[in-house]
Length: 330
Ligand code: SF4
Image (spheres, rainbow, N blue to C red):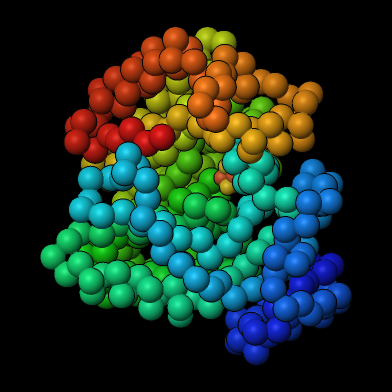
């Protein structure tokens, strides 16, 4: 992956991963900075414009690297955490909260993976009797930029050695060759974010089509990897029930129930300020925003719009999966 411009924090310049990235981008303009926030946070930036050709910012992740998930977000383990080795994403989903949350569409990569692993290890040691789940790809896609990040090369061996800690790789990518090249790991779930084809085509821009994602999931399942289905967010378009019914039929054609570790159903929810920024970025594309309600500082679908659809999709999942493997995440 090549960049025209790379910003590098002075404190991470000598890191071997930084040096590898710089060496593989000999034509890039390199700009040094003290803290990435100087480049990433200023309000005068145009997210939509930057998204056409984002720059890369390489920074050291300081502070709290591993965070507990909200109480209603989990997969049945004792404790759940999330972390992000990157901010921003190769893809351009219209419902993505990142575009409303960040001022900049530039990619931020935190290559100090050793510090993340140290914090995961400290969390694991602190809770020796507990089953822990770690979600990666909260502020990015876990696999889409693997050729740049080398994320799985570092994190998979750690989780392979610590079977009571689970890792979720959350993705829309079909970039799976590095997973197929190695043996599956019992406590790693490759979780594909999926939506009906019509919704993927209109809202999940630049992401691989549904058929390609399902094919990738199928190949991984055949190789023995555990697969997660992440229907998140569910999108209330016209005739949504029919779209989701057909979509689930297609999913079952590719993935037999035993290959599926878990399925989650997520709802679109956003702080009002973040939602307003998303609206302002793409005023001409109100598709998924129909039927939303602003209440107590949060924007979400009206219950009358969403509840019926959620039940229908839940029932569709439950027709093939035990309900103990289906989770509702907001
Ligand atoms: S794949 Fe996920 S992180 Fe990337 S743009 Fe879409 S919603 Fe955002």
